[in-house]
Length: 232
Image 1 (cartoon, rainbow, N blue to C red):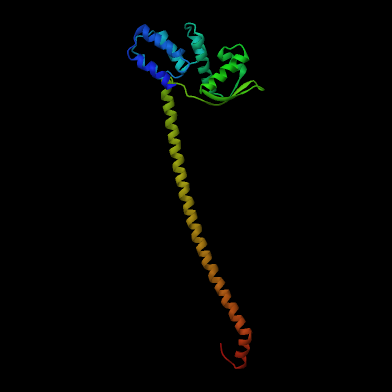
Image 2 (tube, one colour):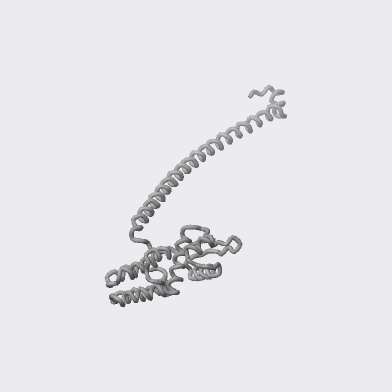
C-alpha cells in the first residue's frame, strides 16, 4: 500500500491545479492505495478545488454515505468499489459481527453475491480479516486496518492514549507494590518456618534424650545401677 502511494507523493511535489486534481483522481482509482493522509498534506498547496480535496478526504477517512451526502460527482466503477471497501473497513472496525442486511444498505449493493465478492476482495487486499457466515448471513470480523484520522479527532485520540499510558503506569505501581508485599510475606513466612524447624528439632532432640534416659534407667544398666546402689 505504501509503495503504491509513494509515486503520488513524489508527483504531488510539482503538480499544480488540474494536474494535481488528476493526480488525486488516479490515486483514489488505484486498486492498491487505501491510505491517503500523506497525500492530503502533499496537495494542500497544489491549487486544487475544494471538491477535489473533499473527495480525497472522504477516501481517507469517510464512507460512501459521506460521499453521497456531499453531492459530489459520480464515481467511476473503480472508485465506487474502493470507497465501498473502505466503508466496509470502517464498519468492521466498529462491530465484530456485520449482518448482510446492514452491509447491503451501507455499501449500496443489491445482491448477496456482489456483497460476498466485495468482502472476499477486501479480505484478499489485507484490509480486514474475517469469515463469511453463510448460515447466518453475516460477516464475522477478526481484525481491520486503521484508516487515516480526521484532524479534528486527533486531540481526542491523544487524550485516550495519554489516559491509557496513565492507566498502565498506575497498574505498574500497583503490581510493584503488590510484589513488595508478597516478598515481605514470603520473608516473614520463611522466618517463621526456620523458627518452627529449629523448635521442632530442639523438641525432637529433647524427646530423643528423654527416651534414651528412660531406656537406660529401665534396662539392664538400670538394674545394675540399682543392685550396686549406683547414684544418678
